[in-house]
Length: 89
Image (cartoon, rainbow, N blue to C red; front, side, top):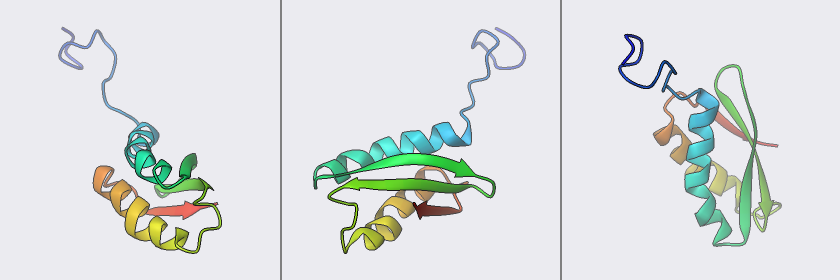
């Protein structure tokens, strides 16, 4: 065991912001895919803004904005409290 991490072999076990976001997106992906859609992480920016691209049936769907705010953004903020904003590109 090293003093830094307590037993991980010298590697830091803390996940980066982007890694946490990727995991959170993977958790919402099945729900979107169940309706013929999908989501792609485009990237993260300063200020903890997450950029995503809706795909499949979600792209251009009239309910996509509601899905983005009430679903995707809410879940990402719950799972990764550092997320400030989710933007569709």
